[in-house]
Length: 201
Image (cartoon, rainbow, N blue to C red):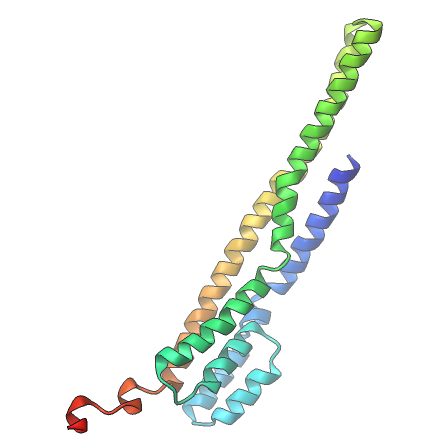
């Protein structure tokens, strides 16, 4: 029961930390997105870059990568943004694996406790006989408590883990859409980077 209790505390702490870290206003601040897009429309790219650097948000770092690639071909800028996005995605998923581990091992710990309790119960039966059925049933019931406790921790942890992964996917999708919108405004057209065949002739 003690390991199961520790798992519940660790899993709850990791879930609450992720719940706080995965807020929409922290990952993709609407005010920053609107400000950057307005500055880009006005051609104030340096001010937009400064605003991204001052923002401690994942999308701010992705937008900074897009703005640093201003003037390059779209595919090159997109590659830069995807590289930063992969790092930010790994950061967003941090600690969510702990909740998944708790969801996996808590029921196993409960089953282990039940098996151990049954072994002790049958050892007592082997040494002293069955005795009264009520006492035997009480011992088995006590052994099953750990399985109940493990499932009581594991099932909510599994649901929390799935929710966190879904939340991260939704945030990454929103970040990608915002980054692509910014990318379309700052990336150069391929024709601007290399002359056409007709002009070369």
